[in-house]
Length: 291
Image (tube, rainbow, N blue to C red; front, side, top):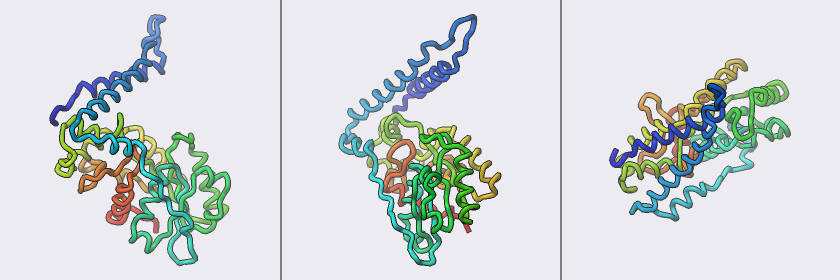
């Protein structure tokens, strides 16, 4: 890579280890090993400032585009999708990534020919037991364990009981979405450290997607192993989002499509283009294996 700065990766590692040691509170000879480990947070902030400042001096940098990317794409979940038709009805009880999956499914015309898809926040599903559960054929649990809402196995089990025992419906567990290490925007980071122009993105799609794979957060794999284990205990289908978003064999995650368009607005959430891209991949790879 042109103008790649390995020093930044080294600083990231030092910052991460400093924070880890700070929280472990290791004591040797009555001395706290990393009592100043909180400085790791400051290092992360400095790195972010460096990357963003470097972007400002990039001739291809657009402040308006940067602001729009940070603002994020407007959520456009379609509601009132369940009708009296004979289409298979899917209710996704999820978090923000479950909402992404909903929009990807709703974006594809081929999926719409066979399925009707609705979304409700996971906590509303287990606390309010909405009528949509009764009307659905399949209910998807699409959450990240210990995420923003601190959801656990017991929450999934509670929804499982509501769905299968109380309503005699089919229950499916969806894996957590891959997340990526970002200072601001992973694609912009790539453009900065490689010094390529935006119009050259289309010629570097494979390298960019390998960059996304390299920068994925490893703890998501641990969460998915737990979700897979839960699905086996409950004897239900498990749909792995990693198979949809990444390709282990080629060591890539689809950060951009084949035309160089961004598939993510931040560390993990789909862009408007990403919803369509992954909706197409759901069909092309037959990812939605539920019947």
